[in-house]
Length: 206
Image (cartoon, rainbow, N blue to C red; front, side, top):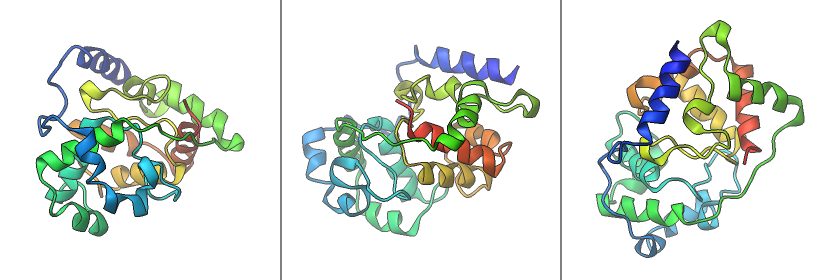
């Protein structure tokens, strides 16, 4: 039943034009390019991070990136000392511009671990009904493209190590900036093995 509810929510959200977080001014990608100089050290040229614990930002939905920056600045629902320093001086317009810039970049693809891929695909596409674990595909789509209208992020090609950390942070209550606690609820039902398998599968998904 919960799986069907999330699928319905995903479908309905496609038709709600203002559904994504309202904290978004219209971003200017050209202006954003001049504002990402400090981001390159961790997130790589044009947002394709070469370091597995720093997320790739290339291709990410503009509104989602802007929201994460705002959440880091606010510091209550998502916190990181390094990011707190980076976003301290950013305005709402700066965040929108940075989001717009990264949204226009082409994301590099990762590669799934063959030993984990089959199990990860099973969980991503079918969840685990015995545990009430919702399939990732319900919100993030068959190719991991996400849903910008609902602020569900692009996951395709993301570093597996980063995805593991993100899901563990949701599971452990270290990150609470998900809509209505959806990711906290889902990750809270996942074992370390399930998290690792899904993260690996997503890394090679496109």
